[in-house]
Image 1 (cartoon, rainbow, N blue to C red):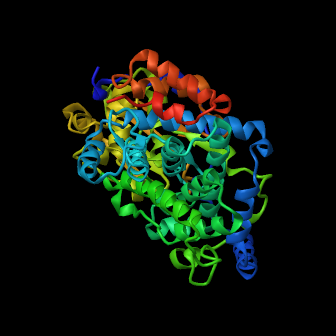
Image 2: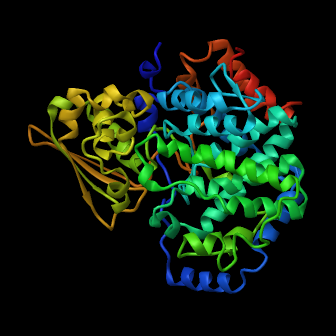
Image 3: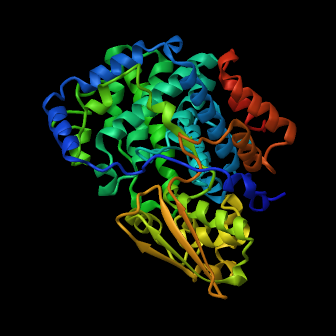
Length: 489
């Protein structure tokens, strides 16, 4: 079966039975502004406090729920990395870098090639993000798995580590990226930065540094070197450049940790200083988000996983469309028009009315609603180049009318489908599928994994790879994941 022809992992019935949760864009109240002012006035030692926590944190300190979510994050990342491994974006990256890659130190997921760890981290990061199907920290819309796991999986093949060490580093990396993201979101994102890259580089540096056994001082330097490498602009969305961002964040973070391991120095306060990272690239700085509750409040426990292969802000509209389709058994031919009220961010991020390629379709709420009605799905297949050029999809897409309504929250949509006979079908989605409150089940994650790996890995290998991910805590060598997820040349 071709990659474009894979089945969608969710059945129509499963989608209709689920609902979700968390606001994507927290608003800044007066109280929040006062909190930020207080945070700025006591913003000394943030980088060192975070570094000390990363260095001292032990696997045994992690609550069972956090370890489980870290394992689910790993499983999801492996699935999307394998699934994206033969996209033309990855083919082009492999072709461009093969001539310049160093020793064959690390695997490329789903492929036969082996690259040096820096380039392997980059390419696996690209592969894991190309379908926009990866994990999401909804508070910041950071996709932490791409930068972090791509970096430490490559490192684990060069410098062996146990599964427990790997999982601990993964969780600490997610904590680092998401806490730093919390400190500057949403202003940093609104400015135009792709926060997965700009905050993800810290997570990759922290996780890699943990596996390298950095001292507290070295970890301060690693975080400082990461701060000097922010990567990713939202202008790249809809192009191959978008997946470049988490890929580069992975290799940049690994680069920072390796330099720091040899005592390559940096400023002591690169995150919080007046001319440091946060003050330079954001108008909001709430440093308490980084340091408060370290070891007791886990952002990694809030990680979620996409049921649809597109921008997260479109998910409520897709959910509503599929529910209406299933409930009333409607077909595209019956529809006169589809009206929906959406949060302003939906149009800002996904307002492409006439996408020409699959990557653009992922940022078109119009295309996404059309395929949701037509196919009852919004998986990888629905975002191929052929799918966005399909005549029936285009005809239905032209009937979608999206109106911005500031009263609609980012996680909501109010949709009405008007049929040709005048009947009006209404659905208000308060929370779309895939949240912390109603997470995807382990079985749904496995179905998603199989759907993505179909046609790339043999079925027996798929099951072995999933089992390996679930058993991460028992692995003597975390590199087993990379070995089972790639092919020998």
